[in-house]
Amino acid sequence: MLGRFSRPDVVIAYVPSSLTVFAALLVKLISGAQVLTIVHDIESGLARSLGIAKNPLILRMMERVESFVLNRSDRVVVLTEGMKSELEKIGCTSPIDVISIWASPASESPVPAHPPTLMYSGNFGKKQNLDQLLPLIKRLSLERPDVNVVMQGDGSEKDRIIRLFQQAGVTNTRFAPLVDADKFVPSLQAASLHMVPQALDVANYALPSKLFSIMAAGRPYVCIAETGSPLDVLTQRSGAGICVSPGDEDGLFEAVTSLLDSKDELARKGENGRTFVAECMNKQTIMNQYLALIGKA
Image (tube, rainbow, N blue to C red):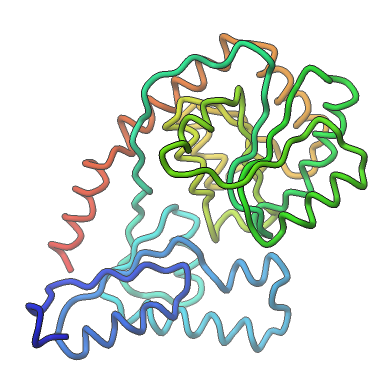
C-alpha cells in the first residue's frame, strides 16, 4: 500500500467499534502517521447499560481494549461532554475534543396541515428502547384517533416491535421501511412531530444521529432522556423540542399532544432547529474544527 500511495500525515479512525482503530494503529506503526479517532459509540458503556454483556470480566476486557486503542491514538473526538467524561473514567488519557456531527439545513417546508402525524424514523435497536413508545401510541389511538403514527426504519428489533404493537391492538400506526437517500428529508418533513427515544442509562455512551437530520429538516421533536443528559442539554440549547424523563407516560402524552395542537409552536420549534443547525452544526464549521485538530495531531 505504501508503495502505491504517499505516506499519510494523519489517519482517521471512525469508531462504532474499537477494533477498527487497530488498522489505523498499524498504518501509524508503518508510516509514522498520526491517528485521529472519532468515537460515536462507547461499546463497553452500551453493553453494560443495555444488558448486552453482564459478566464483569467481559465488561472490564471491553474497557481495556477501548482504553488501549484510544491511548495509542494521538487525539480523540467525541460527540458530547458526557462521552468525554465516560472515556476518561475508563482510562483514556489522550487529548479528547468534543465535535458535533454536521448537518445541512433543508429547504423550508411548512408543517403539514392535516392529519397530525407523529413519526419515529431511525434504527429499531436496543439503544432506542422503542417499547417505551407503546403506552403513548396506544393512548393516542384511544383518545386522539385523529393522530397518525409512522414508524420508519429498520433494525434488529423491528419484527419484535411490530408483534408487540399487534398484540396490544394498536391500529393507528403504520410501519414503513428505510427510504432512499433522495427521499429521506421529504419523508421527515411529511411528519408534524418526531419522537427521539433513548434507552435508560445510555445517554453518555451515544447520541441519536437522526436527531440532527430532524432538526435540519425543520421539524420539532419530543425526546425521552434523563434530565441533564446530552440529549436534554441539546434540546434546551436549540429550543427545537421538548425532553421528557423516562417513565413519565403522562408527561410524554402531554408534550406530544400539546405540540400537535399548536401549529405555531410546531413551526417555531422546527425553525429553531433549522437555525441551530445552520449556525452551529453546518458542514464548514465542523470541518474547520477537524482541520484545526489535524493541525495539532
